Length: 147
Image 1 (cartoon, rainbow, N blue to C red):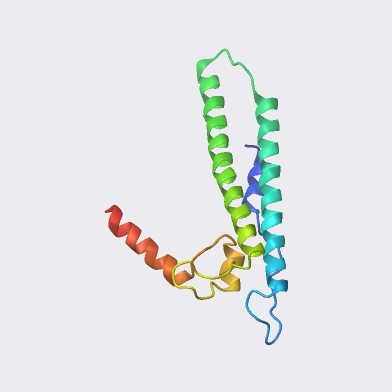
Image 2: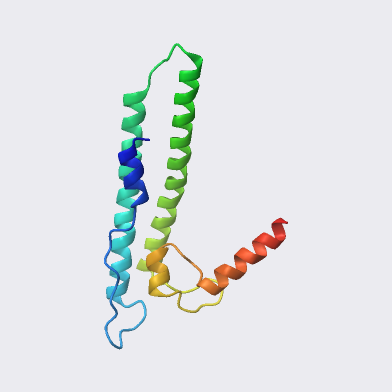
């Protein structure tokens, strides 16, 4: 992956203005939902652009090197890029599901306990489906089950 693309990839979803609640504003008001929809759509757009960059990079850089070491290096680089794009493809699907939750006015509530996830947590991780307490417990349980 070119260094410019790596730099841009690390900046995904960092370009939004934090939401400022109005005094007495209800949690997940229409204005808040619009804020998160905008964040998610921007993030999705950036991921889609990364996919396009990868396709162009792979087409431009594809060469049949006579040296097996050079060929192996290129194949490994392409393999890593494709794995990254696959993770991003799954993330795009999750972003689409999250946008659906916003449209259904189901967004922002913990799947496990039903309390508010919180604006700052959602800005840090817009696809979060659990509050920090439930997520922490789930991770602890996962670690215990894995050992």
